Image (cartoon, rainbow, N blue to C red; front, top):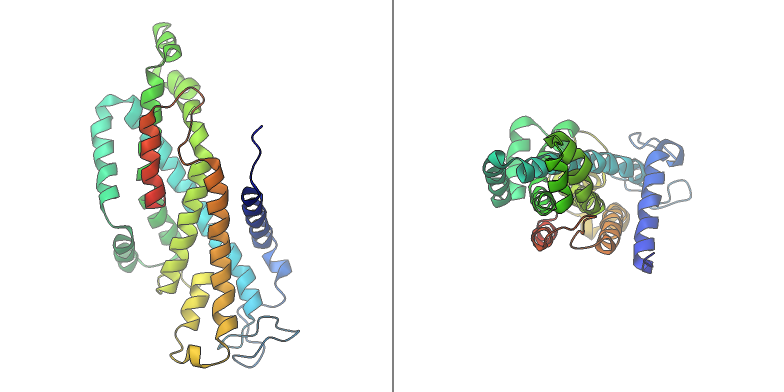
Length: 288
C-alpha cells in the first residue's frame, strides 16, 4: 500500500470538513442567513463572530450555508460531466463508426473558450441553479472523454478482449465486463478535478452576477461586498471579503492536494496506452 503524503491527508480532511458543514448547515449556522439581525456593517461580536453585511445579515451563517450551495453545484456538475465523459469516451473508443463524429464534437468544444461561452449561454437562458449546473456539466466533459477513449482503444486490442470476442461475447458484454473496468482507475482523478473546476466556475460566475439565482454562495457574498465603491476605505472589508475568499481558496487547494496525489496520468487495471497519459495532461491544463 502506497504511503500518502501529509498534504493528501490534509486535503482529504478539509474536503471532509466542508462536507460535514454542508450537511449540517442548518444546525451549525447560528442565525438565519437571510434575516437582518443587527446594524449593517457591524464589527465582529460574540453574537456575530464575523460581523454583518450591508443588510445586517450574519456573515458566518451565510458562509456556512454557502458551503452547502457550492458543494451541491460542484457535485451535480461532477456527476453530469463524469457520466458524459465515460459515455462518449466508451462509445468513441469501441464503436468505430461513431468515433469521427464524437471526437469531432469533442474537439469543437475543446477549441471554444469556456468563460465567454458560459457567460453567453447563461445570459440567454437565465442564471438559475439548474441552468448553471447543466451549462457547466455539458461543457466540462470533452477533455476526459478523450482520456477514456484512449484507454478503451488500448484495452480493446488486449488478448483477453480478443479471446472474449472469439468466444462469441456481445459488444455489450465486452464493454461492461472488460472495457469499462479498464477505465475506472481514471475516475478518482476526474471526480476531484471536476469538483475543483465547478467550485471555481460557480464562484466566478456568482461574483460576476450570474450565480444560481438568489442562492447564498461564496461568490455571491463577494459580489455583494464589491458593490460598495468605498469597500476598501472602510474598516469592514476584512470580514466582508476574507471569509468567502479563504473558503474558496481552501476548497480548491484541498482538491489540488488530493487530486495531485491521485495521479497526473491515470493508469488502468489492464494497461492503458501512453496516449491516455498524454491526453490527461490536457485535462490538467483545461481544469477538467
